[in-house]
Image (cartoon, rainbow, N blue to C red; front, side):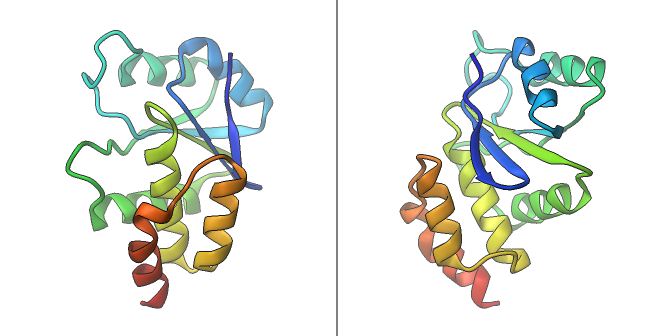
Length: 144
């Protein structure tokens, strides 16, 4: 069962997806799937290669920007900005719970100036995610 949570008009976050969720993503207008979960984090979960193959079969783009236990880097944030800017339609980011995907989206929004820190936090909260643990990073990126 798909649990796509709307962060913005062009971005959804989701807990771990499987190949069976790809069709629903396409029906929701998603054209790019961003995997924020490192392969091997949960060997029983679908790995990136499996999701990439299902996305390709459905005509969707796929990109991996894994976020591990080390946290977020400027490179990952820049990659997410690039992914969002290059997407032709909606984007679906996923990880174990959707939190890392939401955090990365929030940081990318702040870095690109697409929304204010308060707007970012409100959008995340409305989708069921609390960005307060990374709020100082959001504020810092927005101030640059």
